[in-house]
Image 1 (cartoon, rainbow, N blue to C red):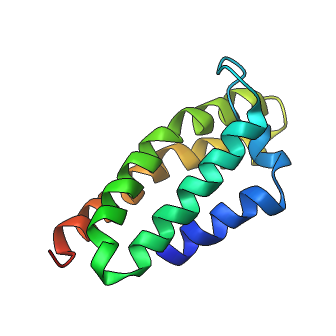
Image 2 (image 1 turned 180 degrees about the horizontal axis):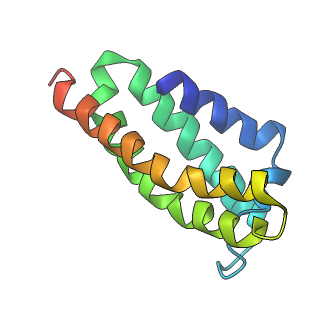
Length: 114
């Protein structure tokens, strides 16, 4: 999970446009700000998870991150609803995936060295 989050965080900087496109327009400020901020958050969280000494903190950060990005995933369903079934199914499928991601991070928290 740590490596995956670091990679996704870096991707926010390398290819920000897809991330910009799912930031809810109702949020104040620019979409790019939220894209870059979430990229930093993902990369930092991933780095915390990779190191055993910071894994417990990283797991808490991952839980918070997965909850925080849920509105963007809901927004992607709204935005992609008219793009055909494959895209619509992919957007909808992302929503319940938050649950195993959160429970995995919770398990990491519980099993991390204190």
